[in-house]
Amino acid sequence: MKRRQRAAVWGWKQGLAIWMTRLKRPFSAVVARLRPSLPWQPLEFTSLEEYARWLPQHVRWIPDPLGGVVDFFPSLGYAAFQLFSKGVFEDDCDGLAVFSAANVEPFCDRPEDRYLVTVLINPYDMGLANAAHVMLFFKHEGMWRIISNQLLFEQQWQTFLEALTGNPYVGGRPVLWAAVQDLQYRNLWRGRPQQGDSRPAFLQ
Figure (tube, rainbow, N blue to C red):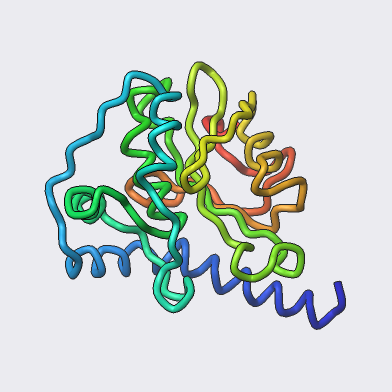
């Protein structure tokens, strides 16, 4: 990259990192109070595969307001309202990740093995609209699995790092920065993923 491009990417990355790890959670709480909501009832599926078949027919990716500039996590109550009123849940990638996290719990090795993972890819490689993405990572039968929007990736990974850097969305491109949050949106780790980084043991 040229020097000007490197500077632009650095500023973009720093701004998104601050938003995602410090500001997005309280902003999401405010938005949740303003949106319609119904009591959330977990959906029931007999297997992870059944859920994967159901998912593309009942969730739909749409950008957050202003083309994704205004970005926030939705509440499950808002998802319940959408499903009840129109039979489909529509949201950005982070909302779809939250939605799937609530539904895959019965198929996780442990309930806590569900993480909202944000990845930042060089926007000059991916295009600005696709360079930041949130996916659901979870452990199923000892292997890491990923749901990206309405798709359960067929691949399975032995380690978190392999899943993070080798999934089809990343597509072999360098991950400039990643953030891992639990389902309460608490920050568990953030940084540039690589061997020997500071990830805790449960993300190895």
